[in-house]
Length: 398
Ligand SMILES: Nc1nc2c(ncn2[C@@H]2O[C@H](COP(=O)(O)OP(=O)(O)O)[C@@H](O)[C@H]2O)c(=O)[nH]1
Ligand SMILES: [Mg+2]
Image (cartoon, rainbow, N blue to C red; front, side, top):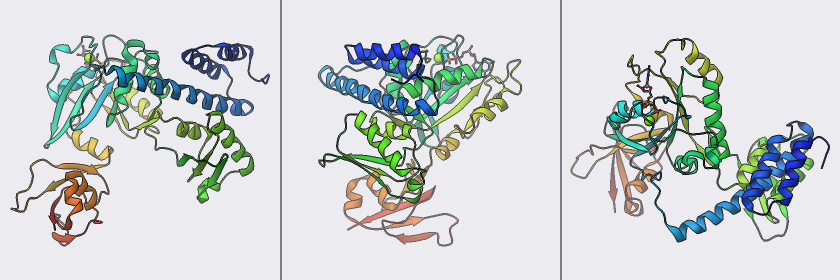
C-alpha cells in the first residue's frame, strides 16, 4: 500500500484484512477510509475501498432481509403511511429542538409530550384543504445512529420510505453541530439528501467483461476517457461484478458509481425548519443558516412558536416543494370529488387513470378536462394530455 496513506490508516487496513466477520470488516474498512487523507494521490484507493465497502454492506443487508422474512417482527418505528408522510428529525439534546411543538401545532397531537423526551415515534394528521399529511416525529438522532445508537437503525430505516424529511434545527444552539450530526448519520445510512440519482445504469450481463458506454455529450466530457473507463471497470470489479454494461448518460463522479453499485442508496427530498428564532442571541442566525445551507436545501423555514410565525400555507408549500399537483375526479353524474388526487407535476391523463384504477386505463376511451381560467374551459382529451394543478377530470371508458 502506498506511503500516502499514513500509519494509522495502514493499521486500520491491517485490521480489516484480519477481521473475521462482515461487521468487523465493515467497521475497519470505514475506519480506514475515514483515516486516509483525502487528496488527488489517494482518490483512487479511497474509491476502490468504498466500492469494496458497499459490497460488504450489501452482503449484510441481504443477510438481514433473509432473517427478516423468517422472523417477521413488527417494529414500533415502522409506520404505515397515510397520505403524504413527513418525518421530523433533530439531533439529540435537552430540551429538544421543538419537533413535538411543530407536530402539535400542525395536528393537535401529543400536546402532553412537549418538552419531554419522546422515545417512540409520535404521529398526527395535518389536514390541509382536504389533503392528508401524516406528520411523524421521530426520537432525536444520536451520534452513531447509523450504527444503531438510540434505535438509529429503525429510525433511519423508516426515513428511507417517507415522502419528505424535515430537519428541525434549534437556532439557539450551535447550528453547524446539529446539521453535521444529522447529515453525517444520513449519509452513513446511505440516504442522499436533495439529490437526483446519478445518470448511470449498471446492468449485469453474461458476456464475461465489463463494458463502459458514454451515451450523451455530457457523459463524454472527460479529460482522459481511456483512464476513466479503466477506473470505472476497477470499481465495478471491486464490487464483485465481473460482467456488466455500464451506461453513462451525463457527468458523473466515482462516488456516483459507488452509489449506483449500492442498491441500498435512496434519494430523499428534505427541508429545514429552524426553530426558536424568538430566543435571545438568535438574531442573524437564520440568515447565516440560509447562507450556509441554501445550496443543498432550497427550502428553509424559520419559525418561532411563541411569535406564531409558522407559515399558514405550509401544505401548499410542501406540495410545491415535492412537485405535486392535485386533480379532482368527476363522476358521470357531474359530481366533483371533494378530496383531490395527488399526483406528480407533469403527469398525464394516463398517469391519473392508472392511479385511480387500472381499469380506467385499460378501457380508456377519452377524458374531459375542466380547467378554470383556460381559454377552452372544457376540453376533450386523450391519454397523453398533461394535467395541471386543480384540473377536474372525467374519464370515459369503452
Ligand atoms: N422559545 C421557544 N421555545 C420553543 C419553541 N419551540 C419549542 N420550544 C420549547 O422547546 C422545548 C422542547 O420542545 P419539544 O417540542 O418537546 O422538542 P422535541 O424534543 O424536539 O420534540 C419545549 O420546552 C418547547 O416549549 C420556540 O419556537 N421558541
Ligand atoms: Mg419530542
